[in-house]
Length: 420
Image (cartoon, rainbow, N blue to C red):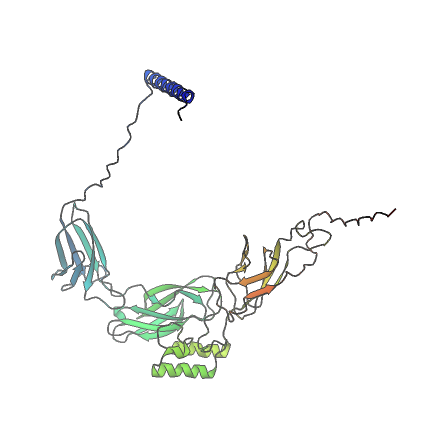
């Protein structure tokens, strides 16, 4: 429906806006301050890639400083794949390559840890790329099955060093303490299993070092964590290691049977049982398995309740939950959760020593349902006792005074009218 009055008002408003805008532009132009800035125009087309073709020029050296030449080394390059063999001076060339990145690998290479690390070359389309590859006869890196764990953890170790070739002795040290001894093979590869010392300090990072011919060959870091190490040899997961379980582990080690018959003996999960793992199992049999055991023991109101006042007025919205560590190893940090939900229903205890108890305040729930160590951060002797369920929190002694409140008035009985 056309409304002549509305159409006339809209036309008048449009005309007024045109007058105001024209006046503003004229004023600014007269004052010399209006400088319209052109808006950038997006082309939508990326700049073209460089079209020049250049060479990848390389050299492979036999020494750590690349001063000597490695002849006869096969060099592989990616995209498109091709190979070159180094000359008598250790040089190689991949000519006439377009813009882009290329991966280079080398053969023959050393086992376990490459002595010729994989290289990356980039051609920018304007110049050649130069690659220098040095032979590493004794890499400083070590391979560990685990880089952290409690004292008593069993760790697999492997490394390579030319100086360890042909049965040269390799000593493994945890900080300055010898923990194992092994011999290198014909390629200088050595492997061992050792146990982190039971007195290792969990407050810092430790060094695992290998020594060949009285010189350090390689080094790696190991962080000792709070808690007990996995109970090596506890085949039935009963919390104790028996003589029968040690005999079972020895039988598996000697006959190369399946470690599934005692998975707890194969702590490094490599499918074999080593002498070091058997020794660790004997230690657990003699000195008992060490593990924390977190148990929620109580839940009570955080503040006392006096019944002349209402619970809401006395702010009984929180309760105190106490957790005990009934194991024989300290526990690291863990969460305490009120599984009935609600905001603020979780709290954290940053550590709990063996035999100690700690309490946290958590959101109140009429039906208590507490779960400890919800993320399984702590290895426990018993994972089945982390739950506490109560109908109501226990009352709290009035050592925490409630806030002021208005006592609930006792209702006055209604008077019954006297019949007349």
